[in-house]
Length: 109
Length: 112
Image (cartoon, rainbow over all chains, first blue to last red):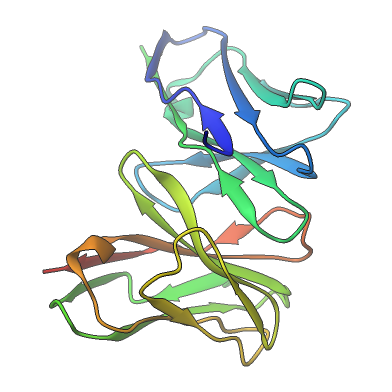
């Protein structure tokens, strides 16, 4: 079993749609969690950190469920510019980041 | 703001050649790491360092060496390149072990 699992997609949605991605992790000792965005095999860039209380940044909302060991990302009012691959990332409190395979989002006009 | 700088951006090697991928950061980050990214595989950790003089293996360390003589630099050495090492390599750094990582722009390596 992979340490961090994501549905690779692709998710094809129209502009303005709401889309949600989920990610599960296997190591209960995981300490910190992130969503990264990656465009066309460029470097990953931090989208947002994920906190136990949930957090929101504009159209993006991230949730963490430690009991069930999953992380979610919700994107509201999708824009064409949201088209990218979204990477779920788990930190084991050792400085090591474990990446999911990534979920591809295509937003269509 | 330089951040994390990787060189070269592109490289073609012949099987058996050696080379060093350079990574430098100017943010005084203690944690640095190397990843490779292959289609359908996500990013996989090769080696990482929690500070100058300290390195450890990640998920896929075979065929690669690292050293960390300074806080700023974390070079990755390919001792004898193989076609299986054709990949995109990313270097990353983070301030603390629980904080987000910042990535370099990547090195696209082809081994023929």
